[in-house]
Amino acid sequence: MSFDRSIKIAPSILSADFANFGQEIRAIEAQGADWVHVDVMDGHFVPNLTFGPPAVKAFRPHVKTVMDVHLMISPVDAYIDAYADAGADVLTAHVEAGPHTHRTLQAIRGAGMKAGVALNPGTPAEAVEHLLDLTDVICVMTVNPGFGGQKFIDMTSKIRKLRSMIGDRPVHIEIDGGVDPTTAPLVAAAGADVLVAGSAVFRGGSVGNADVYGENIRNIRAAANSVL
Image (cartoon, rainbow, N blue to C red; front, side):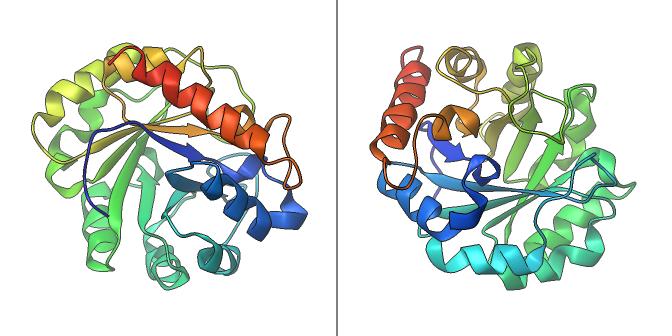
């Protein structure tokens, strides 16, 4: 996984056809997805329940790009090795999920994965200021986590602050929530480079009509790049 700040589109398979995950993953990658975003929810940290390590392991053979696993769970540390074994390339934990985020990021990297830290809308950028040298991805939530299809919350001032704090460190800023061709330019201009999009990618398409996925991905990417 080499580092660059070009715009990357990471479709969230939470919006895919649950009966067809393998084909859906292959379809979005064929249509230009850069990363594949997997939302893990535990029904405790967030009010929804989605995938566990066995599901992530089942997705792995279909993912040829980057498998970006976003843990919306608490606690995190007990499950790090399981997601490493399942094949996650990036593992992101919420700074709000436990008292020892520094230790969590160390453990994620120690298990051979890139380490991500996520910030809920109500959490300030300063919460990760002392974690930047242990972090590969900062995920800025632009919705309250738990469900797809929510309305975008403007976090551009937080993104700009993070971009300044990061400096020349090789750290991605990822945006998760409400990303579409209208909001993509706002976050890209503020300094984000990884855009998670669920319904905005999968809406109107299917495995049998995957060209729609490609059109949606291209529209989001073009909108983001238009301000760079």
